[in-house]
Length: 150
Image (tube, rainbow, N blue to C red; front, side):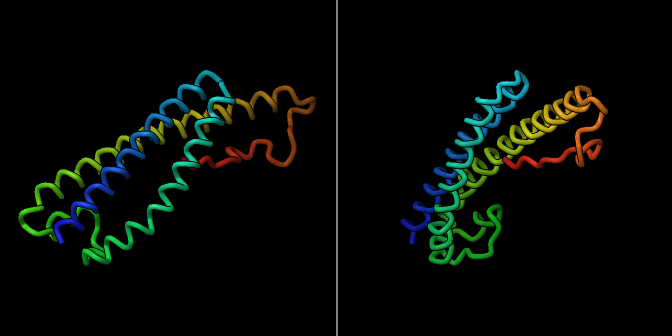
């Protein structure tokens, strides 16, 4: 059983590595959006999509591990208490590391999303200003019309 827990901790570490990569991409995307570098933003989004697909494939592996460890339905923060006593410290460290990386990613992704939304709003204003009638069609003055998810 200890090997299963160790495999699960390794899995959590791998997810953390992907979250680190996503954090770097979100920060890069934010900088690119501030500079107006659309090609770099697009490249970051493509890489984010690739990582997202990888994480979705890893989800099946996680489900199998949780079932084998009888941890299905247990929130990540509750995993250490459900581990054998000799593995609780390792579980606590693995969970805390992953949750910290998740928080860092969320912060970077939120900043990038806000920058992109602001940039899109500015583009919409520029288009409106350049339009002969001051209107650009059905979306004119309708607020943000896109929703970028990271």
